[in-house]
Length: 220
Ligand code: G3P
Image 1 (tube, rainbow, N blue to C red):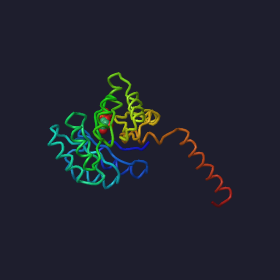
Image 2: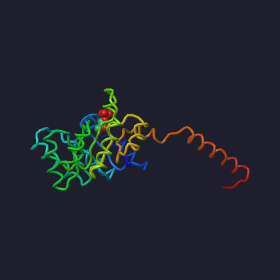
Image 3: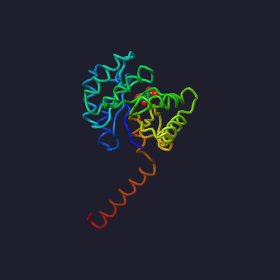
Image 4: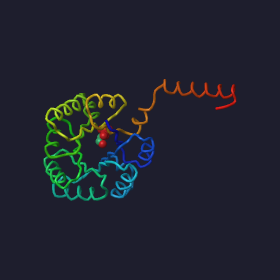
């Protein structure tokens, strides 16, 4: 399973990229709005320059013609751009056209297996089930990821399952076990994944034992 970072914050993206574990970035209009007064297209280009992997940038128009134009404009910003399209009938029509043009798409706001199958039928590169938002309304978000992954496997679908709306480290483990191809996660959750008390304890024991050895024998 690959890791994408779910943010539009360049500092977070630079820091996480330096950790060597992220392959891409996902943004959405809410995440971009949190960055304040940024020029959206320049910002997407800057993110792509840092991550040098798939960067999902969302088309916000809901009408097919406008969405298509927006999608093409976003895709022209960088070869790394993945056009994020909401799960609607017009959206899937746009996905089909963009896919025929060789462009990559990520169908977002997916909350059912049937929606995921529609996205795959339209030719989406990625489909994004929103785990946390289903959990928020008392449903089992991870069951959806598991079912989509298994339905795709059963019918040989090549669309990748991108587990989104991830809220905590356990979601990440479960997404991998459920068969997600990619998980996109907030910076805070990514940072948490590195931590384990026994790792910290082990590092300080190694450091202090090494210091003792050096001071006793006077060499490295
Ligand atoms: O980028 C889409 C998704 O990950 C949003 O997550 O936390 O707003 O439900 P959240």
